[in-house]
Image (tube, rainbow, N blue to C red; front, side):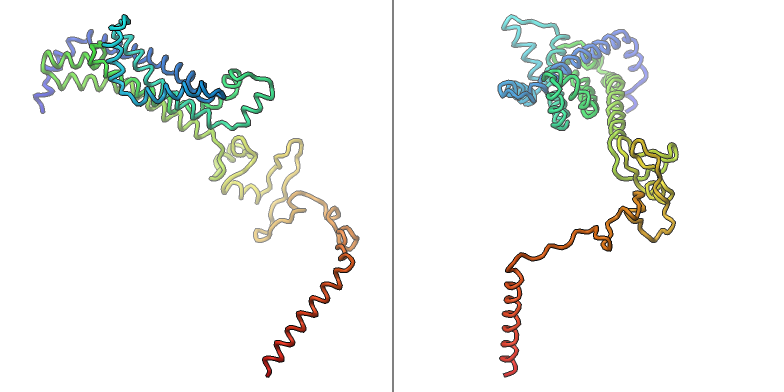
Length: 337
């Protein structure tokens, strides 16, 4: 084990630090270009996938299904070996940008489509009622709301995109994995070469994965909370409520009701009276401050009188009752015999 990571092997590796930096810069450049392309394709095809025109939805579905079900390495080899036969030669850098961008664009398209689908249909109808076009509805109404949902998975896809640049080592892409393979093949110092590559990949991917976790927690904290303990929130603001609502939650709500809380109706300053007897429920009049005299009083004829049965109903009901009584008497006499 010690021989694999011998100090002199690390010295040979670090002596080539300009090549390491160049390979790292190539990986970062390919990742940045592919990410821009993937985001552009993802948003474009996601809008096509939710279009009301069936041919456009079919084009988006064809792109997603073909790209997701063909290996990335095969797509790279098509661009590297087949396209030159058609007269389309590309440098290894641009092959990486195009292949990885197109590949991850399909996955990002599904992420954005899911985010758009989570927005309530009423948002589309409201924008249409205000005269917005389809593109304006998406750009100004739907996508700003969907970004809260799609940002965390997009960050995860960005980290996967960086890691997938390693497949370019098979076509001499000049990126980090290619340098590691070349260095290890020339010197047989496999341990330092691959450990250094792993550390540099980690330096790029770890911040992206942490950004995904941070975004997920941040978006989750802004969602509507229907249960839980709001004591700490209420201590910061005596009239605090669940963000975006007028609902107090948890033990804080019980404590607030016991002590009297300000009503949330705009323009009012009335207070709900405190509960003096903890074992008694507040009446509706006490809770909402309605005067007793405003309630219906049977003694003064405030309640509507019951309707009388229509003509003939009383006779029919009386005859039915007599038949039932007669039947019961006959059964009783039969039992005594």
